[in-house]
Length: 533
Image 1 (tube, rainbow, N blue to C red):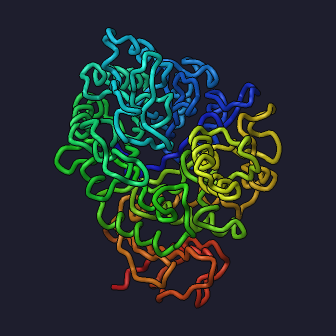
Image 2: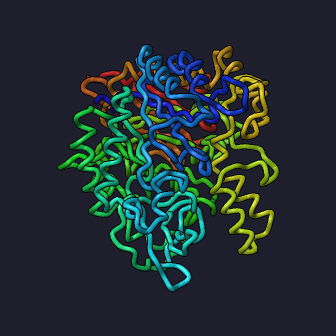
Image 3: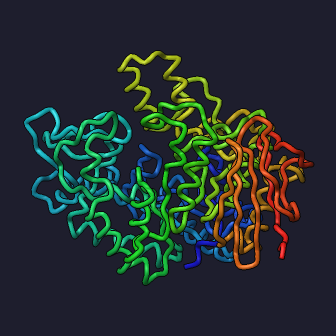
């Protein structure tokens, strides 16, 4: 499957487009916007979960892998989406959630009976202690909860998301059936959720750490690798399916192992190293963004991983302009980030609204937020006596709802004529698709032009990368394929910055009208380099 030269676009269905005016995005809404997605020039849609779910974690708590959430539509609608996308040469990849199910899944409900064969589908443990071990969850708090009979079950995420027991052969067989069901429908692959923490080696106490106690017992284990190798052999290769894994806390060597130099497991991985450069210990404790630290991490991964994914936003991350750019320089920093996204070596992933520069939400009360992780952290930090002003700051900078506010199609009711499930950002009056489609200088039109240019440049789409030393906060590199050579120079700061000499060539992209002896704030250049021989 060709994925290296392609561009992916992630859709968070609840927030993309509402077709029946109930305030919730749906499949028919996505279908109605396929021509817009095609106009961007993307090749694949990554569709966040649309399976049946009670929505504690908005789709990542699945109660039936074979059914569509009624809020999103029907299986007929899903089939039509796959069909209509294929008519436009757009493939669909879906989320694969193997680590856990909803506590409303039939498997878990039956597993509460100790004599049921489904008991071993999950990780239960009886204990005379307060908890079976000291593990803590990704969402804050203990990683164990109890059923009515007093038995403890493991959940690395919300208590409504019990972890599956991937040591059980029957569970793996269930997922092989699920994968084949969707691939037979015509989807092209899977984004694999938290895919390197699905196999638990033991349930021993973890070493002391501030967060995620127990991590060493389930992080990138040998059993995890064996499961992925099996799925590759029995499902992914026979169906020629694309796989990209969300991989937690991996370094370059661990990422390469998941992609498999000797025996392939995943095609690509999402690493988080660059997304962790503005935080201390975990995402709720953020520090000031330092471009040079970000550039150093980007360079390390670009030079040492055989193939990268390139992304700056997704449904779990704050908006990139609010985070890595500057809202005062909205157009300039948006174009700067898009230039970096689409010229680094790797497969680019664009998140809905990123192409128009959507920003972090402007909510004022915790009641405006819907995200379960945000609610849990708010309660935990309150229990720990964090001042209210600091709790608000934590939530405002890091909540996943920053990325989940509804898509801003126009200045009024483009998402839905009803009250949306999550409040709109008030800046939709200025930042929206309709306004940017009309503006030739808009961020949206810049994305379209740059994606088209990338697709027609083998140097940018599949070429090698060669970094050039620049001043602090400035990143420069060549992309090279055979006789083609492209030079990229980007100022990631709000200050005017000196730079080393430009090569001889033609400037094909510049987010300012001119080039001076210093780069302007967030200025980005792309040059086609002349053959000097």
